[in-house]
Image 1 (tube, rainbow, N blue to C red):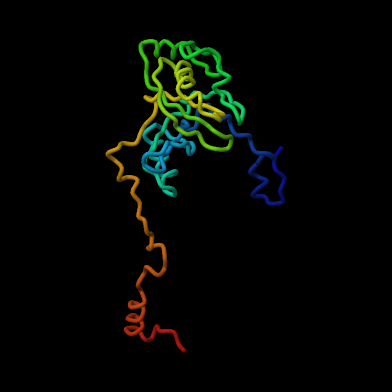
Image 2 (cartoon, rainbow, N blue to C red):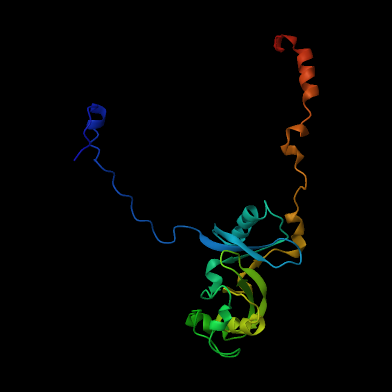
Length: 226
């Protein structure tokens, strides 16, 4: 059925009463998600600040720098793909999620992490460094607490339990293989330098009164009439 209109220019177009629905979007039509951690001051722990969407890890680092280091002091940045972050279940606000993990330090755990057979085979060749992040309170940000050596994410969680398990509260734990994190270079510290004073934003920083007076003297016909 065509769109009814008294305007012949519309009627002769034969437009439908409702537009054709758009085609379904293909899967993965957006950039991958990356998680960003930043260090506020030298010597302090890296803290999670948020995600970015980017076509690659290197571009995600640039996006993270622009988004999360301009308004706040920053001395370092870590970026990792969201897919590289292994997350535990959430525990009690007053306790520790480590207490819910089965097994001891050298025994693998099946929950709360899931790991593919391909990943297990890859890590079987040797141990690697894993970074551990704790969430101490719901609504806060995950904070880096240290590294452990392990052959898989699951074993890294067990190692973290042995090393950091006494810390409370621990509501949630993130485990990330260190090789999956892009770190800012120590030699590039100058990229975090900013202008401490931004007087150029203030009108007082622009000395134009002399130019205005000179313009009035040279162009009396353009001067405002009293």
